[in-house]
Length: 242
Image (cartoon, rainbow, N blue to C red; front, top):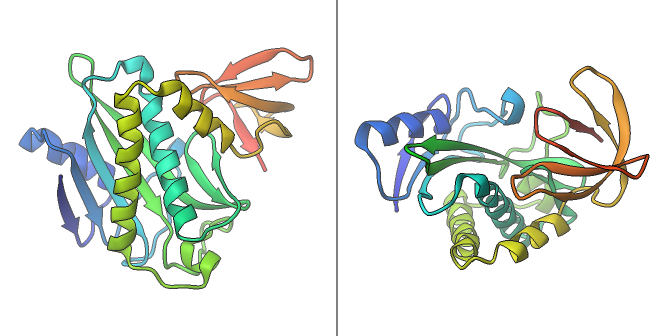
């Protein structure tokens, strides 16, 4: 694996996609930026991050052996890797807010954005991670927290990066071994508000109450509605209010 360290870039995902295409990258590659000027999250959200205080990086990972309908297992692996790393660092009340935000209590500590690279099928994924480490004040993300805020300690960014990489490849190995059922069960056990009545918002602004039961193999959220029926939703179809 090679690691490319940048002083600043707009988005590590955007930079890495262009970098991988230009150089026809084959080996796993990380682009790590000290400052991300236009970080992106799910649904096009802005990611707030002070320079040199957080981990903002993207990983180019070849997954040619993975069927395209199973790419959500990479999301599960990434979420569980971040969860385990944060638990090792002493963060409490951790959970995964579907599909891949990591919460400490009810505050967001890490966001993940995964994009596919298609070349005659699923060729690779670009996994963007924004982990709040030493930042203590958030002006544009009032529901954010960081490792420093949760533990009261300053942490070395590179040390945490290597912990994350180690955890991620542990779960990647489980995928390679075909342990998909166990991986999915582990991921679902850590879902925020699983088996609890929660309020969800539809694109038209209307809301409804439902219970998170599981996720499908393709990553859709399976909810139990008030009439006991089960229904699947993808990321663009529903938003949890909490």
